[in-house]
Length: 411
Image (cartoon, one colour):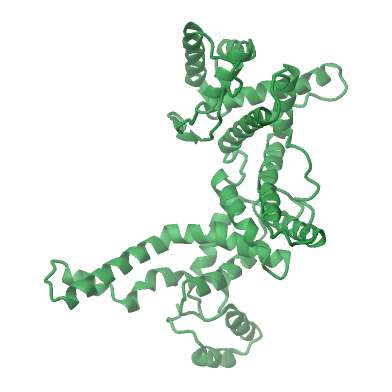
């Protein structure tokens, strides 16, 4: 069955993932009276759900739901189906699985209590990196059948190098070289869910595709967990992760992993941000300009003729291109573009270095210049002119700007 995405009204969170529940015909929904009872418990769980902590504020309600989830297979699958649209229930399932897996160890005084709150960020980073790595397997599989194993192995290593660097830039790992390598098996949260389900013999009654259904369910629950905690843990959002995943397959067509990583950031993260803020209006003005020219050519009187004429081609780029304008030093760090890029990247990863921000900004400068055919100097010219200015050759820098390709006015 397909479940439509619903919102947890108090939080503004939408959980959306599709799972064909009850694929085993021997497992039925509980009787109607039990379903009504379960629905009431979930409603109460959401009522007392605290968005600040991700936990239920009423312990009796939480314990009641915990006890009912695994009462029998019918109950379990009904709760699993309800977790599609209940963030509170998804988080409770994760918390319960984590506690049941790690608390017995702490009781034996073998090591300190392994609390999810202390390891949640690390676990979610592991999950996000593995989700991105899934695109590598898909990209390798989609290569032509004539591709030899050596080339596939080489390409896989190249992808992992790129993803390691990208994961470092967005704050998923502190290791830009090995951050996405040797990531075998599942992330810690998925592992505890698997152990919890397996311990309760839920997997024993299923095989093949039916087990894949349960694995998809676990993945969906962890996605819900990641989506809820990404802002609190200062991690890239699900939207950012999905944009990165979309660009990974094409990222291998660059000379080295760093170049590929910065270009991927330009395409997947910076460009959508710049377009949302500026280029949407630019496209709207372009439409008005084209409409005005059409009507004027047909001698059809229009009410806002003067308004339309104001948006001539020479003026359409002004607001968008202002981001790329440089002062007399040609230092890109003083541009409005750099300020926007720095702010956006620090919202995703507050620990990103100034050098990485500058390199991301420079890459996007050249990317946007080519993509939108902007009448601005190339990055090579900008860097050369800046070097002249820094070295004290002011007159040479002025002469270079005068005879260069820099058409817009400087500020």
